[in-house]
Amino acid sequence: MLRSLDSGVSGLQAQQTMLDVVGNNIANVNTTGYKSSSVEFEDTLSQMIGTASAPTANQGGTSPAQVGLGVRVAATATNFTEGAAQTTGVGTNLMINGDGFFIVNNGGQTQYTRSGAFTTDASGNLVSPDGAIVQGWPAVNGVVNSSAPVSNLTLSTSGLSAARATSNATMSGNLADDAAAGSTLNGQVTVYDATGAQRNLSTTFTRTAAGWDVTATDASGATASGSITFTNGAMTSGQTLTVGGVTIDMSKVTGFAGSGGVNFASQDGTAAGSLQSFSLEGDGTIMGSFSNGQKQAIGRVALANFTNPGGLQKAGNSNFVATPNSGLPQVGVAGSGSLGTLTSGAIEGSNVDLAREFTNLIVAQRAFQASARVITTSDDVLQELLQLKTQ
Image 1 (cartoon, rainbow, N blue to C red):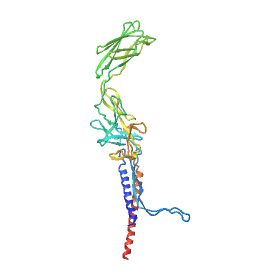
Image 2 (image 1 turned 90 degrees about the vertical axis):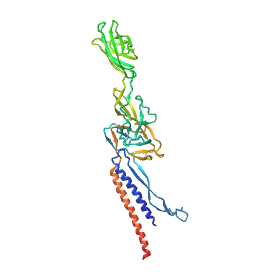
Image 3 (image 1 turned 135 degrees about the horizontal axis):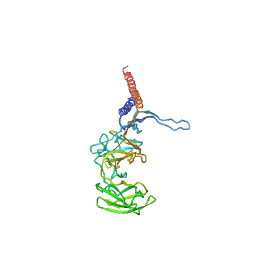
Image 4 (image 1 turned 180 degrees about the horizontal axis):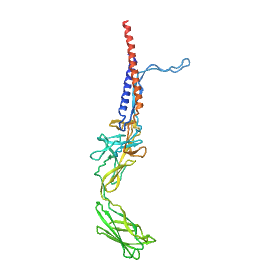
């Protein structure tokens, strides 16, 4: 049989593969985080019909004579160029600016994706549209340990900000230097114990000949007292007073003549609070806003990168799995090393270039037609040979 028939058939098969790949790219032009593919061809084994020879004193050298036996698909390469940003305004939607992949747990298998169209499920897990759970580092009391193994990220509204006992309180104001002896000023603040229970702490300042006496009373029954003196309006003694385990900082209180008044400017205790909303920072840290007014980290999204991303294997649902040729995943914090940063409220669109894909479609179609013409021409030659017998 003619070698050209085999070459034509291999051309049909190879160009059909190119048509399949181009068609898949076009079909996924609006797929979030989709990475387009391209076909790479190589020739097949060539048949030797003449060997090479070295030149001699009386004869020149000859080159090998070979006839190719067709074409085959060498690889389908994935293009990991970043797609265009698409703003959604949804806080759980994330986009990677730069290199890296989200890590997801899909039915117990670790997979990687550029598609950040995440939502939360009934348990508060951050999940992809196919239910794969996004991986990261959950915070413990507002602290994220990025050196620990990654695990499921949960944004449940039942999450609590732990209560914190008050240990420090700060006062401000002015104790009038020209106040009459025996006059008093009062201040009061709500403080918390380790369970978040509230109690009142009050102070009473009494004018004396030397300065001011202060008495602090805690609702738990604890009391403490001391004396304050000023020089040119600045406090020179009695800056702190401790009662019921709470240290009161009075160093910001002044002693100038004129109007007087003191109050508590701040205290560092809080009651327990439930998660009300959250926001995402560029390094993947998820900051929660709680009903007790506190803001603290509730987790951090982990990213992974590979020495050879082209070695990743597509697993469907816009996900990839690692292979021996991709290398091991390098897990880290967004913005560190070669990893990109994260943007909340946006997703990455497909990187398919329709103009290029339609051009490739035409090229593949014409190449397919040419290969088919090789087969029909070879068939005509065989027909001529068959007619030699009948003539």
